[in-house]
Image 1 (spheres, one colour):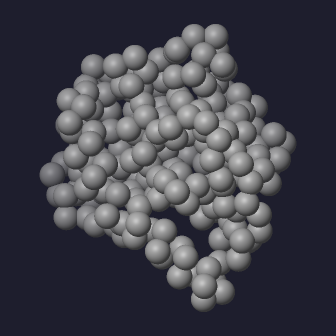
Image 2: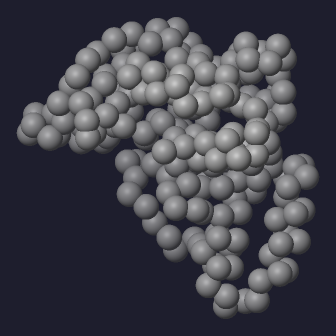
Length: 212
């Protein structure tokens, strides 16, 4: 699924969708109206080997070279035990967010919402983004490396971790127009309200599976 699909279809937002998987990109072409790029977001540009797994584990497909040693070991064990089956291996292009915005819109535009879910390679993509020249107001990052992601975003001194929704860490840019809206929204909730803790307030005791 996609965090951005509803915004595109219901709110008519314009954006860019990155999908390196050849088979899934065919579905993107059929179902999405945004600017579509058949490539991966990486912390290095060029071409890299993409390993595509057979269903039902095709969403685990990716560039194995960019995964942590622990995650690669986990995948190799599942291949060896017959849980994962490789459907194909092929070269894909790796691109940057900044260059892709120019490609899609002719210039580097301000991004309202950016959703990052790249199967345990999220921290590599975050390192590739120049957050000073690419302005992202709200950032959703899948929780594959929670501690590392929180530390990295804190070091930018540009973002505030405001929540965790499902498997996603949510960050608001400190200068964003949305950050004040979020802070004002907090006042609408009474302390002890279940929704306050689940959606608005970061729960620092929550943990997710991660590959450090």
